[in-house]
Structure formats: C-alpha cells, structure tokens
Length: 127
Image (cartoon, rainbow, N blue to C red):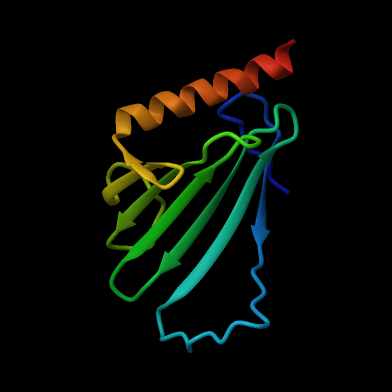
C-alpha cells in the first residue's frame, strides 16, 4: 500500500483506506447511471492525523467532503463543489464551503484552525 506524506508531521506514514458503507436496513433509491459515492479514510501512523473524504458524483457535478477531527475537538469540514469528478485543486473546484462543526465559517478562519490542529499533532509526536 502506498504511503503518503503527512501534512502535519511530514513523515511518509499517511495510509489511505477505502471505507465501505453497508446499508442493510436503509431503503436506498436506485442509483442512476453516472451517480456514485466513494469514501476514503486517511490516517498517519506517526502523529495520528486523520481525515475522511467522501466523493459524491452525479451526472452533472461532483462534491467532495473532507472531514478533519482530532479527539472530541470541533470538527473541521470543507466541501468542494466541482463540475467534473477529477482531483480537487484550485483549477477544478468551482466553490469551497468551510465549516466548524455545523457552523459555516470563512476560509481564512478554517485554514487557521487546521494549521493549529496540525501544530498540536506535530508537537505531540516530537516530544
């Protein structure tokens, strides 16, 4: 399995894992052609950084939700809205939405909280 570089501690110990959601008791509507959902959980085996990405593809758009959570701390979430299901970057994302728990916040505040979170994780593994 390919290990990625952790954005918190810098080590090459970030491991992506596919997440399979089983919905035994839920009546799911039939999916239309071109609709899909893919989930992946990333975790660092050195500092403990982790996040979940959920990619929902529809015929005419794609939405990727990234959820960062550390312990019981507030959850940082951002959602990328795209016209095509490609890798999310500045060129492909039409609109970003940023949340602290369920409250929508501006991008600068969100990024500041993510930087602080990563500093805490980096300090934990370096002490």
